[in-house]
Amino acid sequence: MAWLLELFVTNGRVNKMTNRTIKKVESEYIEETDSEGVRRIRVVTETTTWFATDTTYHNPTKSTSSEYL
Image (cartoon, rainbow, N blue to C red):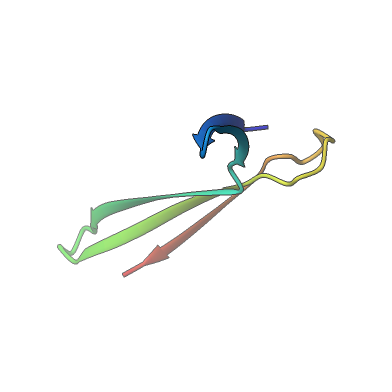
């Protein structure tokens, strides 16, 4: 799991802050031209989601979607 522990000082006290990645979304834009010369833009989006449980079963979960503009 993507956990990050940061230490920072405020008013002379050391404080802890934890961060974790919950979701990551990546989009790819692809130009396609068919045999008739028609141009289309295809968007492929991959989403990765991490859950707060300690189990590794389906953690992270990835999904992919594709659409045309």
